[in-house]
Length: 90
Image (cartoon, rainbow, N blue to C red; front, top):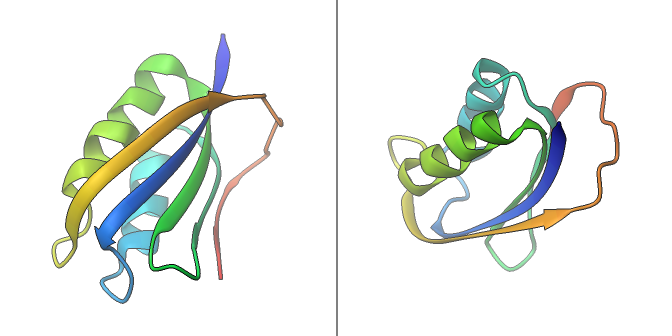
């Protein structure tokens, strides 16, 4: 069953390649959706796929890119949107 999660990552997560590392991890986990920076300094992810694969991404979000310093990850289930790919948005 396909699930959809909205994930907000807080901490030092911009200007540390967090979005691009998230993209690589999402592809590894066979997920679709996108990742983007928010104006307040957070990173926002919408991810769709199997629940186990999404859980792997959420676990990874706590670690993040090598230079990131994650303080908090908020993951909430949402409505499936049927994304075709996983993208990095500005």
